[in-house]
Image 1 (tube, rainbow, N blue to C red):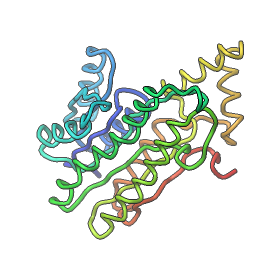
Image 2: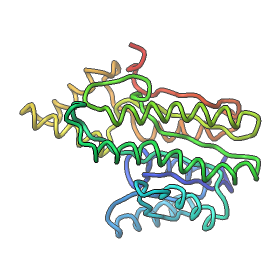
Image 3: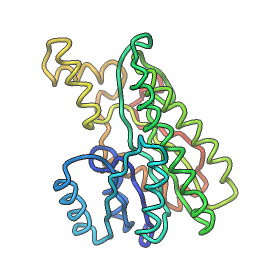
Amino acid sequence: MLNGKRALVTGSTSGIGLGIARALAAKGASVMLNGFGDGAEIEALRAGLAREFGVTVLYNGADLSRPDGAGDLVRDTQARLGGLDILVNNAGIQHVAPVEEFPLERWDSVIAINLTAVFQAIRAALPGMKAQGWGRIVNVASVHGLVASVNKAAYIAAKHGVVGLTKVVGLETAEIDITCNAICPGWVLTPLVQKQIDTRAEAQGVAVEEAGRDLLSEKQPSKKFTTPEQIGDLAVFLCSSAAANMTGSALTMDGGWAAQ
């Protein structure tokens, strides 16, 4: 379905981003991976995806917290893949603390990666998409782009910003064959969420499995984690012709969290 399309997925060496990269590659798209990790493991991942799906898979370890790091990543992708058709802004970090105790440097880093880098990447990608007359932008926001929880001020501010930015880009490209939509997952069992579960288990003196169940029970009525594969399938749908008239939308995949 996506044969010949060229995709960039930020934060795609693990978790949700990797699930999306795999789903796009499975449909025939060439993919630029991005993220941190062990160099040898990333190279094995890159080569494995290319071999499994028979597509071009490249890697750029750009630091998205750096000024215009995301813009440079987009430009490198365009140069090495010959253009960019699908941009998936997925990279994200988290810090948990009450507002009055929230470190200023952590606020800056969360906003830089979770929001500013999304803007930078879209800003760099749009001229090429407009020139070719086609593009798909998928922003991985969060259910926390729609509702709030305590102790996550920077993350929630950033994700609300991503949802708002998605709407603006959707409006600005509404008359072109370019769409911009946001996926808003609830709890997905990724390394980022696992770290929160481990911290919770240690603080409460309970087993990690019990901490995970308690986390789900508080917010997610389905009491099941969403999988990276499910989010990947939704991203593929948003790149398909069936979703050509969907833009500026924030789509939840949260087990009923935001419906409460």
